[in-house]
Length: 330
Picture 1 (cartoon, helix red, strand yellow):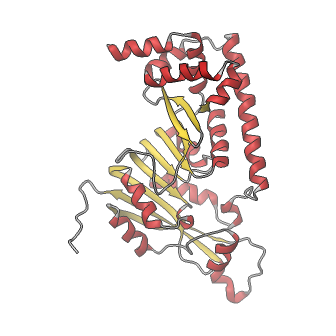
Picture 2 (spheres, one colour):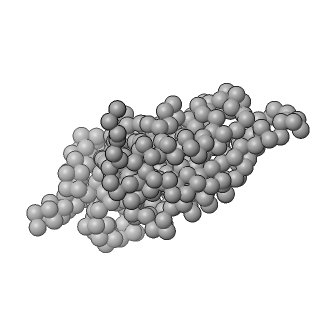
Picture 3 (spheres, rainbow, N blue to C red):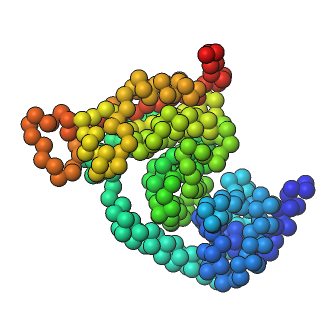
């Protein structure tokens, strides 16, 4: 009963109700909320602290900022918010201000992409069939997923696509610009059960065995240490959980893609991935070819180079072992 009373007291205040209504629609940092609500930073910080302590909001640090979003298990808050009138002038004004701010944030991120030359899509640039890759990822995952983690989530496309199938989704990426676009995308679609955060894939700020499924789609070829990245992905996976990796198989364009696209690895063979998965405590369950693309790089390809220009994409699906891996004594 004490926890219920704490939640009720935390929610029973006008500004805190407005904060809950906003954070149910997406993730916001304190400076965003100051601009939307027109209140001082110290005042809002105090309200946010109470809501976090009551378990109604979750606080996710990211560099100098922290992002606030409705807690996945904040059922009481959702019931309270469902009773708020949509036509309330104050709440409607908050929604309009939030929409303007989200649009400005997305525009700033897009401009940053253009300045840094990151306004291209890798799948398109490599001539890879995005639809086939998306379909392979979707098919490799269970029909219904409790908690899903997408490592290297980019602008949140995979999370958005899988939103109807998951109870809770989390995306991590190293790029703040990518995450700014992802947050706007998810908020526009009202996907409050999905959150994104900045994180290093080698040191995920996530507890062991926290997710039912983990995905790495076209991410591993950028990794300095793929084995360590897979080990970290396996660590946060529940026993019996599914790990899905989609990436390039070995190809003959290593020099070109290493320079033009900053790939660290010229594709991965089945034996190498299986070895890393096994060392991470996962059992490979399915391996298959997804599609074959051709790098659209503006470099002429002669008849003798046709096979080298092909970029095969593979899918590796593994299951986390229910028992710890026994490591033989050296």
